[in-house]
Image (cartoon, rainbow, N blue to C red; front, side, top):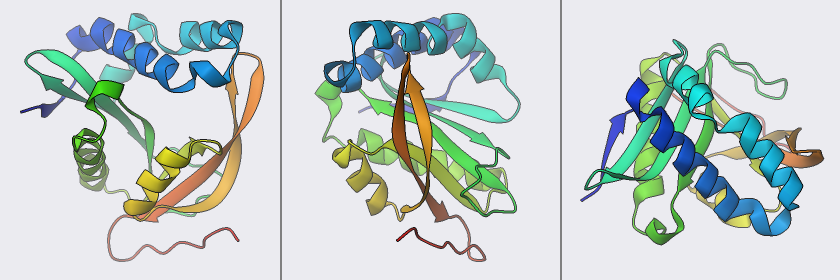
Length: 180
């Protein structure tokens, strides 16, 4: 049975490899190889992953089975997005699962763990960006109560793409205004 744990610095290289692999697995067919290479070089080095793992306002959650990473989530708190109204915002920055593990409850478990970490940090609203052409992810986030509240540009290499910003309250006091 897979289990979820917090990443430590020594996880940086396998996390970088998993992050790049799952990003390519998800988006390579809709982006040029040059844009994918540029994005992955800029985003998934083991040095950058080590910095994110040890950042005091971030947490990286790993899901592993028999010592092999099969999914991960990265969250950060107190990062404000212009379309999100919150006193203490939290962001699900990344959540990816190896394709062979889709449909086994890994993404749900990672999301629940991510929400728990953000709640522990005192966040009142959680937000994330999701590519407008990723209906599977949009549907998944909707099941967790996320609604579209804004949009932003997410650049892959040299290609600016539209992300839908989705948010959900975390705790009793928060409310959201959906985008129409």
